[in-house]
Image (cartoon, rainbow, N blue to C red; front, side):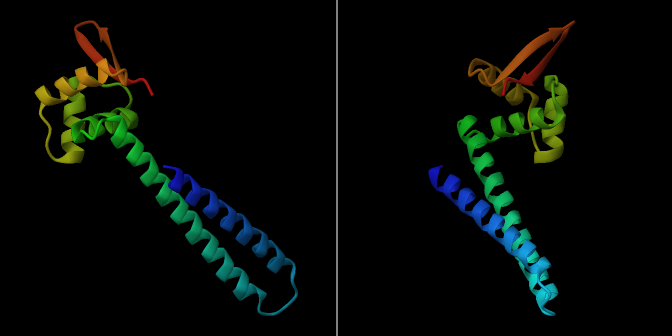
Length: 135
């Protein structure tokens, strides 16, 4: 995790440096500065995209670790994060649409485990049980 933080820090520094160079090139009166500026801007955007990819991978790893490496738990957390509170039926349906398969029984079991771990909470609304993230 520290390595990823260091990579993100360095990418941020590179992006800031490229942004500064871009500004200096914009002030210059040399004829080639438009091309140089476009190249620096493109490089800065690539660095920013790489930063976003590293950040996504870092957050995905944290989510996977939070779910104890359990694929279904990851899908439950991801789906609740995306859609907000849901009952078991709708949650199973949404996971099936994204993942391709999901069992209502397994989703209910994993929800109970996540609830014991304090990651999700359940409230009753009439006869319906609705789950939401505690994150």
